[in-house]
Image (cartoon, rainbow, N blue to C red; front, side):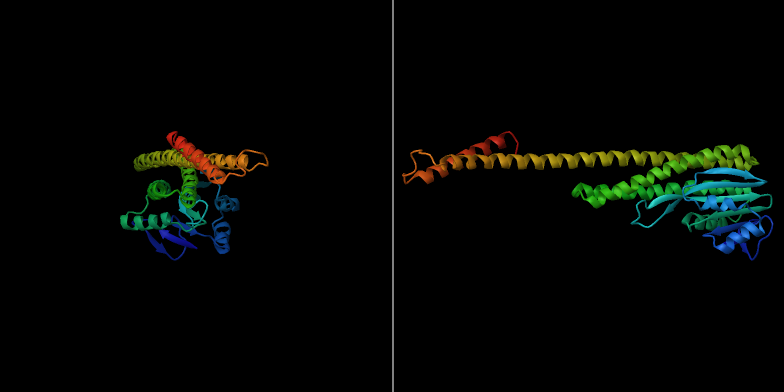
Length: 308
């Protein structure tokens, strides 16, 4: 699906492509690809690079065309292995042509359009739009990181009552998501530092770039803090599980040792040897009393040693 936006004096849709308009392509169809390649003439491999979900943040020049790939946050299904991940957003520019291509429908782009419409100022040029997309991605990284932190605290509260595999698996998923976030944020920061010298930047753009740097740094530091907290939490609960397992094994071992003594007494008196108790009426009760006495004695001893 593609949408044409007039970016002068606000942001409003138009019916067809015009020079210096913004072409927003979301989940491109074959018709969209044909329009971009045949009508506008963009290199075909640009779309292939953007479609690669593992494509890193970078820029590329080709015969006057500029391709910028920005990593933005994306939320998949809750049951996914990594519910929070990042995807590439492609920005393609050449003189009077400005295109964004994303193979997923994201809340970030919906919010970006809505915010620019409320702002009512539009974009001074395509470079201004590029850096505003960087700023929007940084803000949305912070939003998603806050959501991840809430999920971490919720899982920790649940684990404090009962250590459940589902909560541990949920924390493991969030750990993977934070790894993706940190890698993508660092890639975006590196890309931003290069674009400052590659794109025609004016004074207004410099102020905007400074804001982007602040938001990006905050997002990176927040992701690092949450990662450290999550690593510490996982280590703590791993130690608790090991400690609980050791306690269970110690208890089972103690029980086995205690049960060994009455078995030993019964075995001694049950042998086919003369022991003086074969014909004694009180032979069995005496053997039973000895077994119980030995068992109670060792239970008291083990309890004193806190082995049970």
